[in-house]
Length: 488
Image (tube, rainbow, N blue to C red; front, side, top):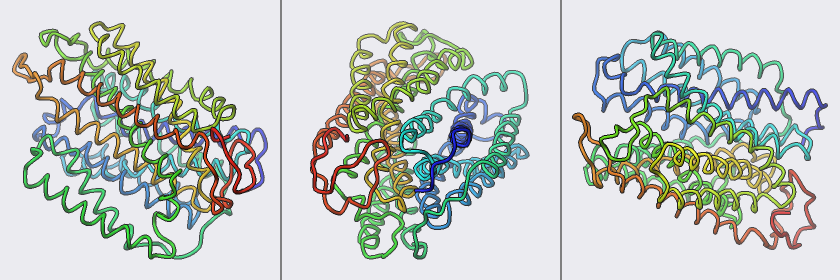
């Protein structure tokens, strides 16, 4: 680890990296409220417009493990600057385009920016004093919700009062400021791993992830038994099966499966996927409950801007709970914090099955889910960093972020698959039935419970000898071979 930075330098570094996470989340979310208007604005169909979201998701899923590995090899600051340049380029293309192809290209380039979050977390491990790292990591994780919370009402206001291209100018300006801030504030880390880049591993993982995520995100639109969905699923599984033995043979793999298959790290990544499912289920259903017309029997007919403003406090809660997550991690251990956050989310979803018939209960349930998600997401990167060597910190967090993307994509697929349950038509538009929405809550509660159970073995485990190369962020590590309880 690099020598600890001074107090002012530490604060500036944390603020800059968290700003980067907020800008990234802002770009991912900003177009969502105006999606219903984009078919008319771009002169295309709603099915084609959905590629604006899919392209961002796929680009993020591919770029995150690749950019994270490059960061470990060639320098985190250098790769972060490259990602920011691509993000700004995407915003510029989007601001100048008037067609679908340009918009999809813009969104794909913006998706590369998701890699900033795991790289930023790895920089915190390198540069922050051990006592301050958990708080920095928790704040960095919270920026995803904060950026999304800002984007929803901002997008609605821009859509009502200005041309939609202004959204891309906003993200481009924010990205440019972030580019300058990183160049000035973020130091160049000397912690790097050697070897050459695993091009074959990157290519196979990209193909596998793209195919599987296409099946998850487009299956509801194409049909779950349609040839395209089945081909993507089968093809992705076959390529993934070929990728695993390749990574085990390569000396410097894209993802070090020798470390990733350790029981402790495997449990963390599995829990991450489940918590990702639970986190994403909330906005999927909550926005439906608030915006669906009253004719559905459950909706409240609110406009997008009103919905965004009402949901903004959930982002505030997510950010405000980050210090609590860091405190619990230091006091009780990251595994306890992650398990408690997942349990909080699961309990909220169980309660929401019976209390989702008024605006107040809907918002209260969303706030509790946000609280639990903040606790869990603040602890996840800490657990990962405690279980991997410093030279693998960015790539390990990149793979963990990929597992979160798989969880969120699965939540979207489950919601799409259940949309037909009790569906009803109101004003010429088909809306999912109330039972379908509650079914998503049941699935989310189950996922959160599984995430909690996955933390059980980590609460009191025997440290294997080969973990001696890893470092603790927040607490002294016992001698190798000792017993480590509650991640303490």
